[in-house]
Amino acid sequence: MDAFFALGQGFLVALEPTKLLFAGIGVLLGTAVGVLPGIGPALTVALLLPVTFKLDPTGSIIMFAGIYYGGMYGGSTTAILINAPGESASVATAIEGNKMAKAGRGGPALATSAIGSFVAGTFATIGLAFFAPLLVQLAVSFGPWDYFALMVLAFVTVSATFGESPLRGLTSLAIGLMLGLVGIDILTGQARMAFGVPELLDGVEVTTLAVGLFAVGEALYVASRFKGNPEEIVPIKGSLWMSREDWRRSWRPWLRGAALGFPIGALPAGGAEVPTFLSYVTEKKLSKHPDEFGHGAIEGVAGPEAANNASAAGTLVPLLTLGLPTSATAAIMLAGFQQYGLNPGPLLFTENPALVWGVVASLFIANAMLLVLNLPLVGLWVRLLAIPQPWLYAGILVFAAMGTVAANPSVVEVGMLFVFGFLGLLMRRWDYPVAPMVVGLILGPMAEAQIRRSMQITLGDPLVFFENPGSATLLMLAAIALLAPFAMKGLSRFRAAED
Image (tube, rainbow, N blue to C red; front, side, top):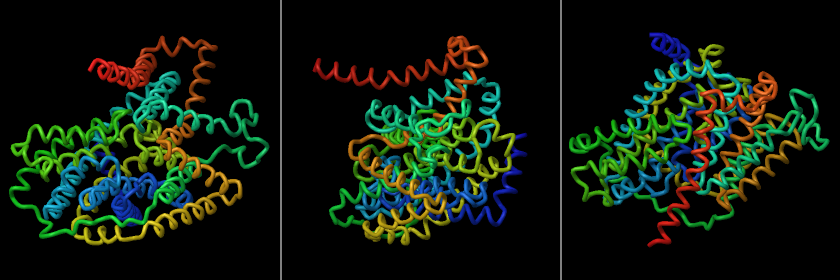
């Protein structure tokens, strides 16, 4: 009953005219950037961080959440029409969606994608509303050693799941942790790694790093690979409406996709890629028309797209309750919270319940807005694909620089922005994930504070991390998550050598 009451209070916040405006802007921007290949919600939220630092915190976080949901919706449009997923989570949708579009059934493919996203997003948001308070009750009993172990688990899982190589992910994390040491030590008051630059005494700004790596780095990377070849867009033929047979074949995949996406998205090492491909494989096995897979089976669009959007709501569970990001967009949203002096976690539910429950309630509203927007305006989203890439990414560079100057008018800050942008270009060129670096910068100082508190309480006894059941369990999970990818690689090489 407490969750019902809190959610009702959240709707009172989310239904305020200004909050509805923020939600509407968020879903429009999110859908637009989801449609554009290579520009995901993480990049958009990163660009908006320096612009929104003086706006209402609740409205801004609602807008960021709307961008996240909208980006997940919009990614399916490009996946279906030009076989270029806007997000990695839309790769599974592209397998059957583009085949349907080439067969003249792009309309039903887009329709089942939009309706499935709405159904799954609604169920997953209900799960978020009722599951999050239970996790908060557990987290309230955590000691500093438990929080440190939890952050170690977050470091390992984020590093191991982003990108192809766990070692590269750990390298990216190490750079982020090193950047987190820059500034004044809170306990001793001594400057660390500031190199005599006054602007560095306050530490490296998360917004500068996020905008540099995601926006500037992505723009430079695309420019370095641009060949001037236009994308081939498959025109939408026929009606957008689904036939009775399409509905009959779609509703079960929608529910199964939601059931897979939400719990996996809520896991520390979840993400959206695993449930979408798992949903695709499941639908292929359960389908009464397995021969259609590979040629445009509607179940192969309905299930993965539902799993994709359900996982977005699942990702917000660890972010809001524990302050742990499990996706690149969640990492940037965490930076958004910190921009307003807010630390996601169990205390946020008691210190600022209006914001938390306003954001949760706004997800229901954003979901409905997206369903209303996506189908009638699909022609507009397709026209966005005609924007020349040089114009698009030149605009991103200008907007990134202007936003950083507006937030912190300093030559040093702008210089750091483009240094981080060049670093982002190199990391993409050599396939190093950038999200672990942002996570390291955000969570590194927090982990340092927790380990210091633990040492002070126990008079320097490191065994406290292994004697306490909670922290010992979390550290064991972190060790498994760290060693599992290397063990799997070794096993696959052994099998290959035997063959």
